[in-house]
Image (cartoon, rainbow, N blue to C red; front, side):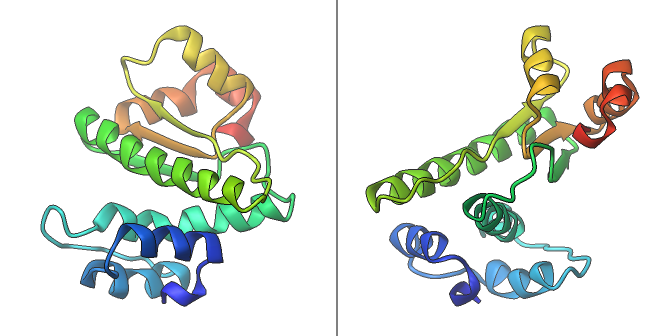
Amino acid sequence: MLSTFHPLVQEWFERKFAGPTAAQAEGWPAIAGGRHTLISAPTGSGKTLAAFLVCIDRLLHASLRGELPDSSQVVYVSPLKALSNDVHRNLTVPLREIAELAQGKGIALPEIRIALRTGDTPAYERQVMARKPPHVWITTSESLYLLLTSASSRAHPSTA
């Protein structure tokens, strides 16, 4: 399955890991195929990357084609704020490292934006997100509810 990813994603993954975990090897085809997928595996088994690498790859492809919309494409709803923070960190690092890899190869990679929205997100950050929505939202269920029901989100439904 790794061979189906963009060469930048493949190279990044191969530099970081010895190979896919079982959760990744079994999850990626299902996720890429658009099937509802439940990945149940122990902590540290690569579930976050299993869930998100297909999304990162698709965003990268769209970005390089100049077809990445200036709107949100992926929403991750976490049951816990602390988990949201971990997921944000676990997505920010691969995106940054893939962008650095692209830059080293002379490839201009447009920015893929990721944002964390919880009850602690300052108002000025929420305003920035409303004006320039991230491609990937990471949020809690309570914050998603507020995001979807706020007046500013209703004014711009494609960004919520």
